[in-house]
Length: 602
Image (cartoon, rainbow, N blue to C red; front, side, top):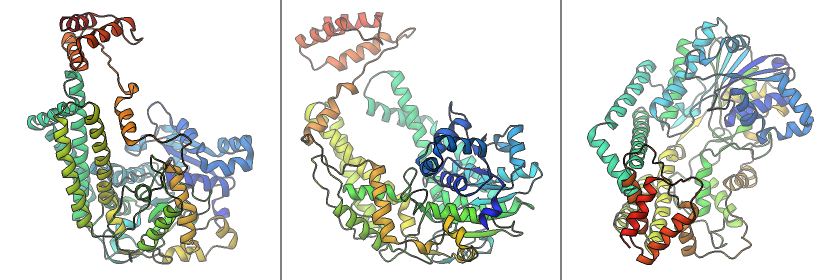
């Protein structure tokens, strides 16, 4: 049914460079004959849409099986005949398509919208522009072309928010979880928040604060460098404020983050403006590595669970909030791609058709069981530390979120006091190694806090996602389609999936150390010393042509570089400076002043 229904069809896909989108393109190429794919791809820098198709999609290892089956020439012939990149940007009107691109889109029978800002810490305005306004612009473009293809919109199960109980496969307006929102007002509010935050960041008191932070980090290397660092700090401050704004607005409405919040608004908005365009909505839960196709364990980039798993294996994440008896709803990417294809192959629905691709309702895995599998795996296949010693994984006790956050906050406060004290001392020798050690520990704490903030609510989620429509669709397939497009969550053997498929993939992708080094390991002190004093990390470059403050810049560098040297060592610096000029430097007035200044102080 699926193969026959889609044979000869022209399908447009957004988000094809992403994890799910790549899996979807591979599946369609592998299983559907005489199909035409039009991939709407945003150019990136100097890379055109066509270049991104070649590099970011077709060269991915997801296509290794197909390339091997067809041979290199056969694979190229298939993709050249079947796949075409359209330069597009869902943040622009008409999706940024030129006339030829609009014509291609108008000829499509099916449009699969998979593009999204999937980060759980996306700034509020970007999440709104991509996740909410992106599909709206797509619908408006289709309407301007006067076409009505079957629109398959990829959403998320988490539009149900932080609720308990069953979340049904229904439009949100028919759900008890429904939160009536004016999506236009929410979008404008997000844009105003960005404008206000940008203005606020430029207030004199904030600029002074950013400049002081820049000086604290850099010392006194020169005005231009401090100015650049100040601007970086300002931009980071704005982003953090926008992320916080998104999280606060989402939480106030019962959503875990801006991603789920804007996805929920997008569903409501598209149903409002779609007119006569047939609409199907596919809501996956947490998408992870593949169960079987294109190969077991295939993944593209790290998803939600991988950073948590790796840091658990490294021993840097010893606790995580959660409910051991709670269900973590995970679904392999190939099951999601197959479900999308099956939905796309259906007759155009007169009313919005919703399908949830989730495991919790029909084949659940409890968080405590998952943690046991992970603990067992790293017990048998441990990650090695710098001394080639196996890291023993801790046993998670699943404390409450408040307790974990309190412990991490206290530890960060202690580290901050220590760092503040050391910053007032000359950073040389032992102090340099201590600073590097503290920085490493602070990064570990920051990561742990970030994981809890980003993913804690998903682990604690108590909603159960109904899959009645999904299973009914599965029951309607013949054995041939079931073999080619498996999406029944009941086929998953969780121990095999977690222990034999997913975790080995995570370890490989994470490039962590699992086999001893052939050479004896360095002591921690030597490692930190090399990290701090490595000559490859030391560089002084001056571009002083037409610069009024050349003397100040060079003199500052000369002072900082030699202030603790003896007179004899200062002479060595001068000799080395003149005898070994680097290719990137040429003699300038600044260098002459530097040598004069150093000689005057010998």
